[in-house]
Image (cartoon, rainbow, N blue to C red; front, side, top):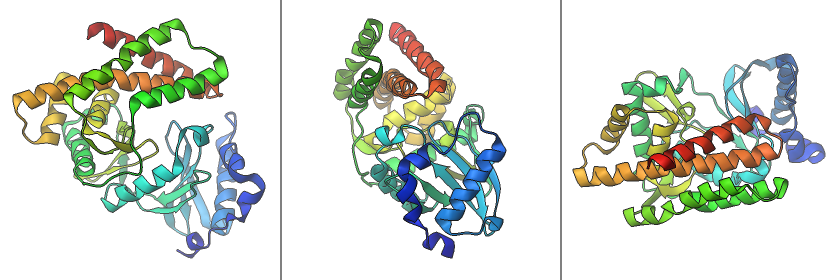
Length: 325
């Protein structure tokens, strides 16, 4: 498509990445945002605005993304969220997303600016974005297991490793840069979480390419038997069971639903292997809530107020899981 091949980068010279990050305001109307999207897409793709239409806001907790029709083709245009330049390695995301595309797991990226995080990819036709409700349906549990197994068993290697314990420390430092020292209550709970690393090492951590943030909303279903996995911002090489635990946690699976996920993913495991996996899942659920709690608190401290309640919810659930363990 010619307009994509002739992307005009000269518009970055005046506003650079700060312009792209701060382009939208919280109190703007849909019409105002639509005008801004059309203007930026027109500039960057050198496309006449009359050929840009059907602008639709999509979901996402980190960035602002829109479905946009350009010259009768549908694309997803992503504007980087506030603070993402501090927390996300866009070179890592770009590299890993290409691997995911090569594996048939993601749509084609037409443009990716590693400096800004601005991205344009093809819209997946016939897409059904899963959610906490639809993610609990048996057929969808099996599809999510299939998508993750394709990734984990691919023998590919992502650009960098993921370590949740180092990441928790990173986000805590980012939080303290704004608010000062964290509370004693937080330190106590964090210490209990960090101690779980020893148990995980004992159980064994075999690194494979992982999504790291497999919310149900990051699974896109097409038809009855095709699954895509999107949003590779936090991806890295780590333990496959992390991704399985995340699906269980974010979909709020029952015991039966968790068993269905494991059965679909492993296609037969012995009792001893299953016991070890279930123990790791229970540990990873705690570590994940601590990880995302600290991530959200660091972002909230920088102005993302909508994440305050999310961070509190994660922290309280960590406390509950630790008491029950």
